[in-house]
Picture 1 (spheres, rainbow, N blue to C red):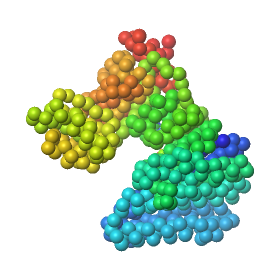
Picture 2 (tube, rainbow, N blue to C red; picture 1 turned 30 degrees about the horizontal axis):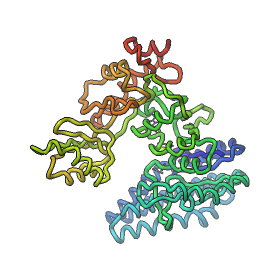
Picture 3 (cartoon, rainbow, N blue to C red; picture 1 turned 180 degrees about the vertical axis):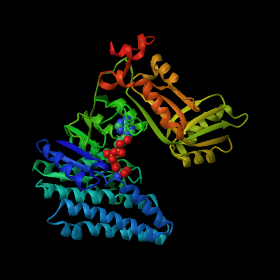
Picture 4 (cartoon, protein in one colour; picture 1 turned 30 degrees about the vertical axis):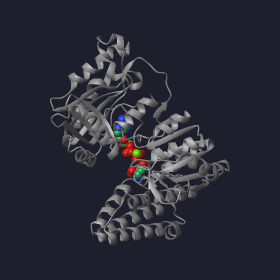
Length: 475
Ligand code: ADP
Ligand code: ASP
Ligand code: MG
């Protein structure tokens, strides 16, 4: 069995859905289960509609929704010439009516709780999975749409729900496996699930990748394919570095680190269920299915230090915590208490005698921390930071890579450097506005076009690090 996930750009319009149909048809012999995201831009649009309704601008929200409905119906018209009218009338439009009613309810109470937001954002995948399953059938595939809320059972941690794997396994056994075995192609919306009581949840933005790997693990699939709009995992985000190279194969740990440090091509939680069951994950380009993409797999540990990619995570908040006089010795325990109590996630941290600097994902975490610590410390909050990281095994232990990276940094303020926090990354905190330039400078230095070694990695043996890095890697 094979789980294939198609992201928003891969199902953005009728033409791309037709392409997806051809890709799936070619893999029918592998017994595919298909996971789709919302059409590109729809989840963002739903989020905006929710905010508009909450803020009293219902008409604007409803007109955005109308635009969305027309977009889906136009795609249906192009994909289902014979029965688009019946499909829109009977299947699609009632789901849009449901969304309309929800926006009106948000407007009425002027409140958009995380629970309601999850219900609202989930419409994108409900619409797209309906449309894609119908498009498959119109092309003669035996496709059946399976409602993810019947299968992906989660806890009630709205906006970042965690899957309940045992429950999901038993749902998969009754509602997906028998269909696949009888030659059907189940089509599910990614990103969404529901609590055991049936309340809609989401797995976090970009979470359709995670759905694919949750289902892959529950089905014990032979492989998981993440189909997107680039040629796989690359040596940098190609939107920032157009000369970025494709990485043909990468270890699970490096890919997970890359996802965690901002490479949006994979959701950070995607790999764990696949790793747990040793299922290989492929990242592939739905516009160029003939390209080899990236294979993420178990590989032998190695002493070699190498950079696989330059990652960039934006929207980082830096919280500099300074102990109040006489309370220096209590600073660390107070901060850990505060983090635990406020459920703040820290990306990286650096400490000195009376100061601890933390990289947090949101301003609100920094504010919560500041309030909790007010008797013991003062907190200086700096928003608008980005974390630029070189990612690869033993990267931080390789002096040649470090030297090359430090030499390459442009003449811009670097707020912090994290070296050795993990062997897998060497990271720099910069202002968000400078991030692209820093990524490009590091990428140019570590992946100079004509010298990129086989497999697109800047490999520098640890014990010969004084020699010119890339010449050594080619030898
Ligand atoms: P999808 O809609 O298919 O889920 P995403 O937009 O979530 O696609 O992820 C694909 C995007 O990830 C690419 O268009 C690219 O700009 C971005 N990206 C960031 N870092 C990398 C990287 N190292 N390799 C490949 N793509 C990357
Ligand atoms: N549609 C959701 C989002 O935009 C999930 C996904 O695309 O993976 O976040
Ligand atoms: Mg994505």
